[in-house]
Image 1 (cartoon, rainbow, N blue to C red):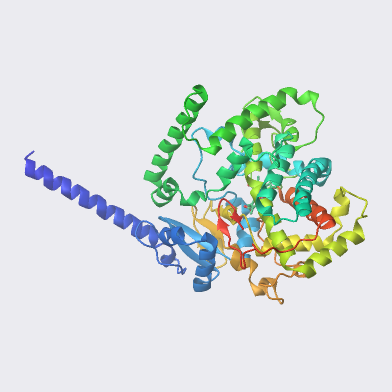
Image 2 (cartoon, rainbow, N blue to C red):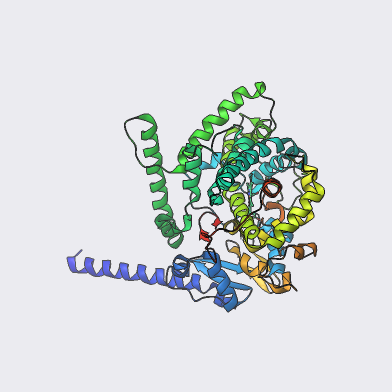
Length: 522
Ligand code: HEM
């Protein structure tokens, strides 16, 4: 073929490829316009990611678009269409009524090669998720929590003692890192089955690795951005990047003289894996009720084949499709890891926000102290589950903190698995529904008549829409650890208020800043 013709053909092929890409992106970006759904105009390729990456807070940006476009609008992450929703009836359909069609979250970017084996309940889907949840739900029951309470109490004891030493010296304290250490300690005792020194030893490697892991807003990492904007290309590069880190991790382990940078995730999975196997070997010697031992009771070395089930089936009865009541050791390791990630900073942040309110609202603090004094004898050092459960104002106080300061909205997504209709909207398979929690939690129609911007625990005495409070999600896939978290938060507040009065100090930010990490942190 003559040289010139080859050049022209190549130029033609490139132009055709460009035209096809442009047409493809345009067609994708016409999704919401065609459905007559408003939303911020997408830019070529990135969609609305440019604005989201620049925004100081992802969820405040969603809220501000809600003000502009309404309770149901469309945005694009790259070419992926996302419904952003604060219409609670729409969300009730997604999270509860039509759960079978929305039984999973937006896929996570950081799935390691080979991680399918270690999938935990947060990432698992379909029948595998259903089986894991079936085993885990009772692990967080009231009966089991009552048995775990001494472990939680031990951690709170240590926290209160440390705080008392600061109070004796009359110095100002930043309680956020202290709460984080206390919640890590609690998860270690209840999910890892070991008592650690994390509240005193700030360089405990598990503590620092979890802190590193959670300090990142994964959406803002370079490879994550690439993978979101260009899923085919970015996803491939992300996999190479992950494999490279896995190789460096292997080299670190094999040769003591090399110290390559490593992902905290890999270090944690490795160490938790060894730990789970060790605990399993010693299992018969230890009579201890905790999440790890409950999961080990269901452990099997066989591989499990999950039968396809209807995801709307009630998990607690499993009437139509029988569930294998087993977890593989890899799944147990995965779940221990996820409890460490999902159950520490979330709880610590809520405790920090609680402390902020206590320090700034003395009327609320006094009401709480009065309720505690009226219901719990001053000689009782470690209250029981029943004593804590009776404190109604405390319950409303913590719910109000969660309403005003939702900490885990990153998890509030659902992926549509089957074309469906919700009210006037047709939602297509593959589309993501993202909750806009601030618009819901500050909606006067849902939370009035008292101004939702006012801290007012009593508003929780009124029955609200089932989707008006989304701090722990909703429906069958809501937070499995809610009871655990609420108990830990309540126990800490009671012990705190029985011992101290919280005062604000000069270093307090006048209007504190929130930070987007894996959770929303004060
Ligand atoms: C204040 C503390 C906490 C908050 C605000 C919180 C919030 C959330 C939210 C919003 C979700 C997503 C729910 C949904 O998609 O509908 C979630 C899921 C989850 N949380 Fe929590 N959480 C907290 C504490 C905990 C604790 C203590 C644990 C474990 C010990 C835990 C373990 C999980 C797990 C495993 C899931 C995934 C459940 C599934 O997919 O089936 N969380 N959490």
